[in-house]
Amino acid sequence: MKKILCIAFSLCIVAGCATSYKAAKKPTANGYFSVQLQEGLFNVSFKGNEDTSVKVVKDYALLRSAEICLENGYKSFSIVESRDVSNIHESIWDGTPTTQPHIDLTIQCSPDTNLLYQAELIRKNLRHIYHMDK
Image (cartoon, rainbow, N blue to C red; front, side, top):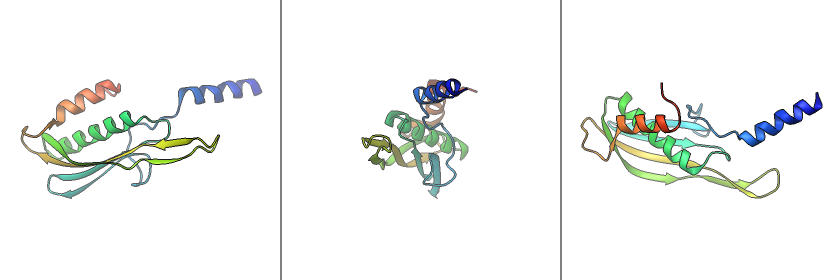
C-alpha cells in the first residue's frame, strides 16, 4: 500500500498541477476574473500558480478577453493596458524563488471588426491550441 501511495504522489508531482482555465471565486484566487468598468471597457485578469507558465497565463487572459467581448455582443477588442502583477516568493520546499504569474488587462471592445483582435478568431484558435474544443 505504501508503494502505491508513493507512486501516486510521484505521478502528481511529475504531471504538475497547473492552473486550469476556470473562473476565480474571488479576485485573489487562481483562474480568470473580470469586471465591466464602463460600456465596452473591461478589466480581465488571469492568475496561475507556480506550475503555470507565463505564456499560458497571457493566453488565458487573452482568451477570456475574447469571450467577454462575445458574451456582451462585441466582435473585436484592443488592449488598452496590460500589467504583469505576478507574485515572486520563495518555495516552501527548498527556498528557491518561484513565480505565480498574474496578468491584468484592460480591454476596449467594439461591435465592429475594426479593432486589433477579432474576438471569435482569438476564441476559436486559443480553445483549439489548449484542447478546449467543444
